[in-house]
Image 1 (cartoon, rainbow, N blue to C red):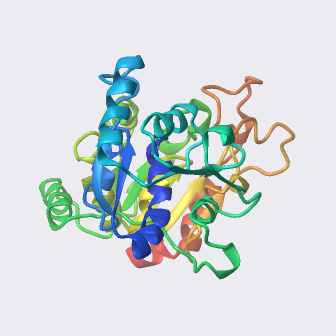
Image 2 (cartoon, rainbow, N blue to C red; image 1 turned 30 degrees about the vertical axis):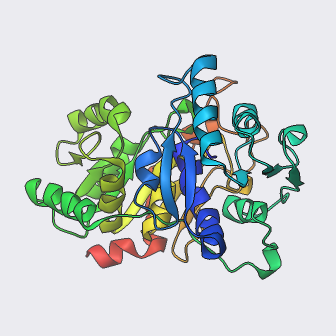
Length: 329
């Protein structure tokens, strides 16, 4: 059961893959938004959407899903998300073994396992499956992209007359304090060297339009593709520049070099990129950073220094270190 944000769902795929190696493909309860990311994954047998804030909201939706899960007679549930609702759902479904982290709702679990204090979130989640970190090979997230997903991305590139290689920018985030405000200037600088594509969902369209009004040479794919098609498009990019948000994890799954911009959060939380060419950019030495686990909607102190003082030159140098600009020349 993983009903957290899209990025968290992507980071859970190594755990799914590890469990499937011994137990076969799993059924996964997740949000309707994340369901398409898992429905074609080789480690997943079936996706069970739980629209906890929509159609399945409240007690009636909870009880209906509990009855549905109970009818399947599952032997075991893994609960990586620190969610009371998920833990209670597994109990209500009468699943005899319920494995969760000790810092969650341990009185609702039958097995409580310690969450590793440090390391990457992928490795911490693997520990839930009982795999000691010292003996666990490094695993990266994966997505079950189909040939149709890749073809859709390629058709979009052809329709917009973009030839690879190109730079992809993901300026959005649901958390306002995670948004770097200099994407427009970065896009202007990069557009002088080659094609630039904005990636994101429908919720990022307004942000993209603001940027396009200043830099019309840039092309936006925000809201134009499905989640998996967007991941396939990121896979075609020479480099992705992104905030600490879901596109970062999509890039990790498809192997695209990533420049990750961290402001109100820090990579030490375990959600940064870790590919051989990936780069992290942030302002060190601020006593107010990090300010929260997720990043608030706006800077609590009003100055947003963690992002405002991060220059375009800092990000351009990080892109240079990936080697992507050399490959684009």
